[in-house]
Image (cartoon, rainbow, N blue to C red):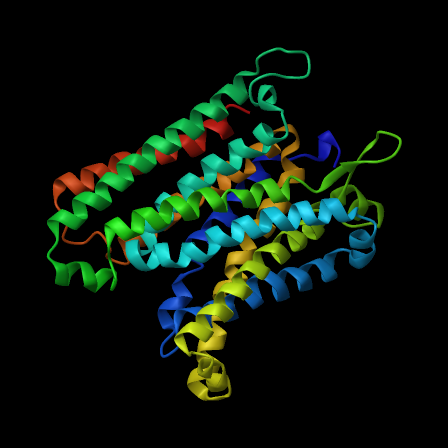
Length: 362
């Protein structure tokens, strides 16, 4: 996309829409009854990690399979590998929500994911200096503020976590269970740490779809998609599909293992019943909504020109904001005292600042 065609404000809005999708994707799971966690999670994974992204790519990229076939195998494996690491985080994401609730769980998970996903790609590429300096070695103020935004985000996570711990101490057990049936802060925070860090590998995979050809020229899956007349908004769909392939493999193995361990393969036989069709619908809907967040990320990147690198941080920051507001709406903080609400308010304010900093300084 040409510089004149770039529209950072529209790109930022699209990132925020992705954040909204990431915040609400788990809501349909509240309608799921009668199936084991691993069974309905597999339905979610098939829909969100394979079927929907592939359908989107086939619809928007004229020669999708040609793009894949012209991409070096090592690049495919690298992208899928980071997708597999994300898959580990994705598996524990659902457990995080079970133990902490939508609001607290997604706030902590998305915050950690934002920090690792923003910082890991340049670190592993040996481009740490690019976080602060331009090609001429001059410090770029906007990049400095982006890093400050990540630090503020982590501080916001600390305060949201303090709110969760305070909540656990304030509410009687029956009140906790009303909002989050399996609320357990200790288990939840451990799962959230694992989930948030590994989930950040998603952005590493999405930014890793490039290679150097025999002549030394830099090539990418996005460029190959552009070469077959793919619209600017959709050039990131091939790399998204490949990354999610890796994530799906991990989810598939885990779900089938748990089905065997818990003897829950019978859940799939219920799919033809009215109740079973309902489970498939709601789990599949959760998968589609989830996939939309990263589709929005790749759609918004071309619009943002040289500030595209902050897209992941904006996406995750928006997820934190929307998930926290959703948690308030769902009553997850009802009955808490002023201390807990104070921690939550400070955390949300810091998270809001962390989202705004990369935007207003570009």
